[in-house]
Structures are given as C-alpha cells and as structure tokens.
Image (cartoon, rainbow, N blue to C red; front, side, top):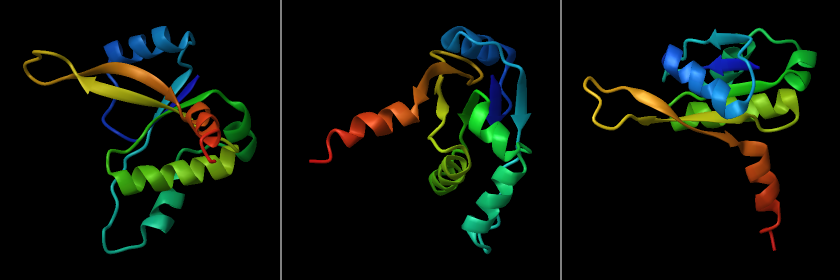
Length: 127
C-alpha cells in the first residue's frame, strides 16, 4: 500500500500498527509538506498539493492508497475533493489519537476509516 502523508512524519510504531490494521505491507510513504499561504487561493494550492504526490492518473485509480490528511479542515476537505476527482472514490484515511499518559505527548494509530464506505452507507439515508 502507498501512504500519502500530509501531516507529521509517521513513526515506526505508527507504520507497524498501520500494517497490522490494514493487513497490507507499506510499499512507500510519501510525505508532502502542507503549508498554505492564507493570502492565496486554497483551491489552487490544494491542486498543487495533490500534484506534489507525484502519482499518475492510472496510479490514483489503481494503487491501494491510504491518506493521513492535513489537520486544517479546509485543506483536508480540498485534498479529499482533489483525490476523489483523480481516483473516482474517497480514500481510506488514518486517524491518530493521543497515547494515554505519554510524556512527552505522542500519537498512536486509532483506526483506518474507509471514507468511500461511509459515503456509500450515507446514501441510504438520503430519503
């Protein structure tokens, strides 16, 4: 699987937990720095952000991709819109949580969320 990371680098422990949870081996992690200029269009910056991942149209549509979203909600929403447009579906995303009683603070894998499955289930509640 390919991990596209728009947040802090994933630790060895987080990567190992991701492999356990997914049942897949991480082939590569692509870390993409996510710094937006608030004085410029976020839409254009999001397009450039997803371009920076470096995947072809075919790769977006065929590779097993898991995404660690940026933490700023507007950037995350735009990244999801770009990814959906390129892949044809919503990706699976990583949710991290603070580890209990960790000093200094650290984060651990909480779950993988299949956003396409969430979207598909939500369609049944349209009525």
